[in-house]
Amino acid sequence: MRKLIEITTSVSVIAVIHAIFVFIQFEYLNIFNNTPQMAVFFIPAAVRVFSVIIFGYWAGLGVLIGTLIHDLYLHPTLLTNNEILFAICQQGVAVSLSLLVWALISRKITGLNNPTINFAQIDAFDILQMCVIQALLNSTTAHIFYMWSPSINMNFDWYNYAVMLVGDLTGAFFIFIIANIMFSLLKRTRFFPHKHYDDTMNNQ
Image 1 (cartoon, rainbow, N blue to C red):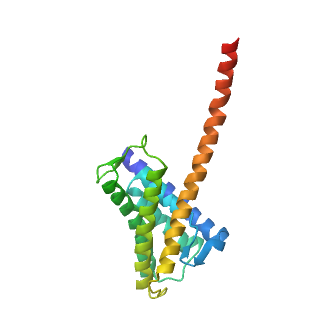
Image 2 (cartoon, one colour; image 1 turned 120 degrees about the vertical axis):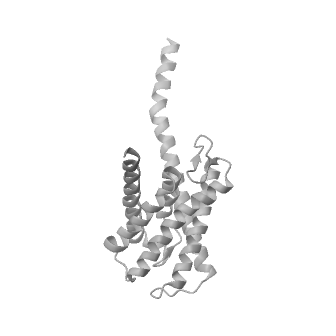
Image 3 (cartoon, rainbow, N blue to C red; image 1 turned 60 degrees about the vertical axis):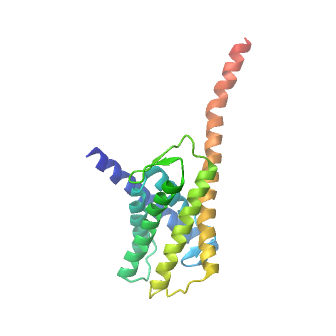
């Protein structure tokens, strides 16, 4: 029961955060949007990367629900019900599949059914690696959906593929850099006064 509550809470939090990030992207950052489907700077990619790192495969379900919330209520799409179902599944599956691929190639992750990440050894290169995996999988599966969807009817184009790939990479890694800077500042603010106090006491 406790495990079920934890999973439900995690999925709900991811869904809400992802829906908010997608809303911000299309409401306030639309200057970066190359088309209604892709952008050269896409911040929701950060939610996908970090949610799956922290919460595992269940993050895919959270992203799926978050996409559904956005597409049905925040920014309703003109897609058919079948297209919406395909679209949300595409994003959710791509997120969970990225963790599986990362677990297969990274030595800092053990297990495939329930990947265990050695957070003590994870560095910026590992995060970048995950960003690349997620960007590749999302861009590839998304373009499969765009070519299949009668409403979008988009032919495969290497330029558009590259735009989406770069957008996912820049969005995810930019948020990572900002979070890393804020964490470093927080550590300094928290620990430096104590160090100064200890030095003062020792000098006395």
